[in-house]
Length: 316
Image 1 (cartoon, rainbow, N blue to C red):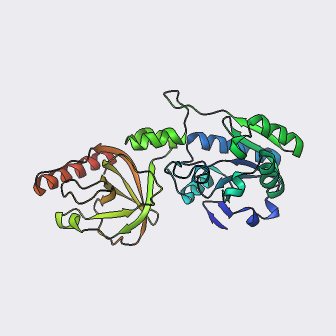
Image 2 (tube, helix red, strand yellow):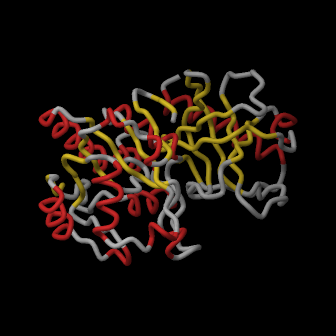
């Protein structure tokens, strides 16, 4: 059990105290905790206030597809800690993290409802999206959930899917595509905040330092999605403060020494030691594609231009 941003995180139903009952619950992966997720959670909070209950979310320690069809699970937009933080800021008071394993995979819809919502949480009401499915082979539908609610004594609210300005349903899948395309402004609109990568600063080649642009090389979890290769503007977040940054996501083609992408941030007007520190990189704008330069002088000239453009975009 741990707490962050006003939310308490419980690892499994066994950690959940009886005092959390009654509760209003929503269930899902909620990767990104995007604008549609947040609107659904506000409905959870409103219903909990009406019923004098605790607003909680149930999620999973890993994407269910990692068990159902290993290798087909999508890369993640947010870590579990990031999801918890945003949920807490919205007003959710507890996040229950379930281990989605083979036993849970084979639960029938009724077995899942009884084990998790009824016996595990003493649920008074459930709020889910219109596309919610649950139970073995996704056999459980909205109608199934409503019938089980009538049987076990909890109410059900079906939340309409949210649309973006282009009348597309705001979804984690759509946001992943926009991240992969480098469309940071669109991503920020759909998340209701800038896209953020979290990682630990590791030692690199020190080439940036030699060029006059020392970078923080970010070790990012393998299961996280990376933006389209290129150069971005944003902020480095560390110890409660933000620092302007130019970020390269790429392969360093000028030097030709990588076959997997690396995230490197040049933090403007910053000279503190970040090695082994956990930082966050907030992406606000995409500047350009990653380029191959014929000589180092041209690379340095472009980097200086990138920094000046970043200053303008960030208003510093």
